[in-house]
Image (cartoon, rainbow, N blue to C red; front, side, top):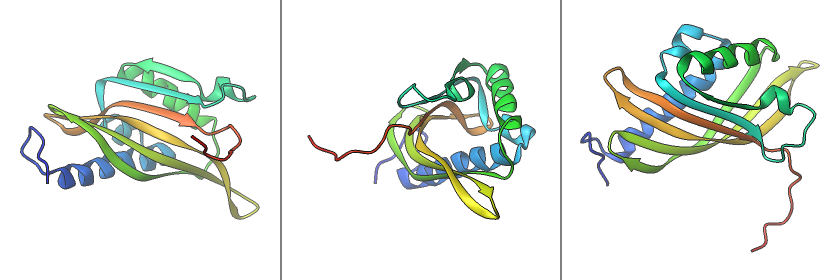
Length: 157
């Protein structure tokens, strides 16, 4: 079992990371702004886009921001113009690297809304980023979301 520079084993860090990312998506969906702001560093970098860049909603999902104020302003506008209830399910979260007090991660997201009383799939994609240990605990320092919009094809190498 590997250990990061803070003396914790990787599985404990993975658990904390899963809790952090899960808290991000839950509090974004419910728009708990104070909690959401408390989950990020002041210098957070956030990006969002589709994999194709060719949808009719590119302007709605595209972001490339640095700094908590700008990120939170974009998140608020984006959330207020999205359906409720909205559910982001983060899965397959795993650590892809550790460097000092930072842990890089990757995960899938699955997004739904309710239509005609049933869940309706809105999107899937990846959410990759960096979490950093700070005096306030483990916080998101970078989050890059890429939504799937390109039709699936056979994976051939």
